[in-house]
Length: 325
Ligand code: TXA
Ligand code: MG
Figure 1 (cartoon, protein in one colour):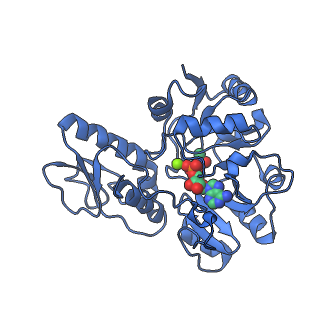
Figure 2 (tube, rainbow, N blue to C red):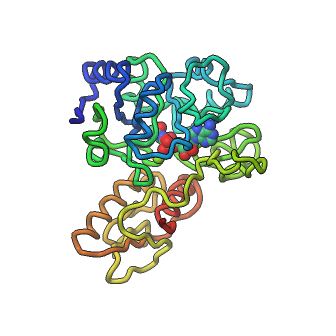
Figure 3 (cartoon, protein in one colour):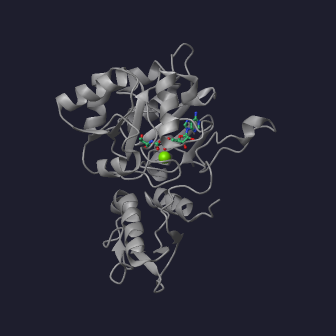
C-alpha cells in the first residue's frame, strides 16, 4: 500500500525516513509531483526506473535544497551560478558537469558526464529536502510516457502500490515541468516553467530550443542526451488533435481563450498561458475520462500561442499528439 502523508512536520519526517531507508516517496514541487529516491543509493534509483517503467538510458534530475548543495554535486562556472542565483529556487534545471566524488549513483546520470540539477521552490519539496538532508533523484511521478501528475491523487492512481508514500501538497502551481538548460553552449533542451524569454533576458543572448545536435557518430548520439526522448510522451489514452478551432461530434474539445465557450473543457477561458500550464495535465486527464464515459476516442485541443509558457504547453501537447508505437 502507498501511504498518503500530510505535508506537515510529522509527514515530512516520515517521508525523509523512507528516503533514508532506500524507499521511494512522491512529493509535490511547484511544477509537477516528483517520484523521489536517494540519488546516492543505486538500489533506490533502480527502483525509480522500475516503478515508472522508464528506460534506464533516460537520466533523472537531482533535487537539492539550495545552491550550496548543488555545488557539491555539479561544477558551476560564473554563468551557471548567475542563472542559479536568478532562478533558484524555481522551475529551472541546469545540466552541468558532474563533480568528481559527488557520490551520485551512475544510474541517475545514465552514465553521462553531466548531471541535471534543480532547486525546487515548493515549500513541501524544500521541507522534504531539508528533513532528508541529501540529494533526491526525481522524475515526474507518472508511468513512463503518460501524463505528468499535478495532484497527489494522480500519483496514487498510477503508482499506488508501487511506492512507499506520497506527500500530499495539493495542486502544483506551475503545472508543466522545469525548463532544462545546457550551458556550454547555452541551449534550452526542454521548454518548461521558466519562459524562454526570461532565460534569454538573463543570458543576454538568443537561446536555441530543442535536443542538442548529436555530437559524433558514436553510440552516445543515439541517447536522449536531451530530454527530447521518445516522440510520444504525455499521452492520454485518447488520440489528440491540435490547433482545433472547432471539434467534431466524436471529439472532446479542450478550449483556450476565445475557443472556450463551445468547448467541453478549457485550459484558460481568459487566455492566460500561466493558467493553461497550471491546468494542462489535469485537463488532459479530465478529457480522457470524459472521452471514456462518452465512448469517444479523440481529444481536440484549441491553438495556443508559442510565447511565454505557451512554448512549454505546446511542447507537451505536441508530444501528447505524436504518433504512438
Ligand atoms: O519539473 C521537473 O523537472 C520535474 C520535477 C519532479 O522536478 N521532473 C521531471 O523529471 O520532469 P523527468 O525525469 O520527467 O524529466 C527529466 C528530463 C529527462 O527527459 C531527461 O532526459 C533529462 O531531464 N535529463 C536528465 N539528466 C540529463 C542530462 N545529464 N543531460 C540532458 N538531459 C538530462
Ligand atoms: Mg516526465
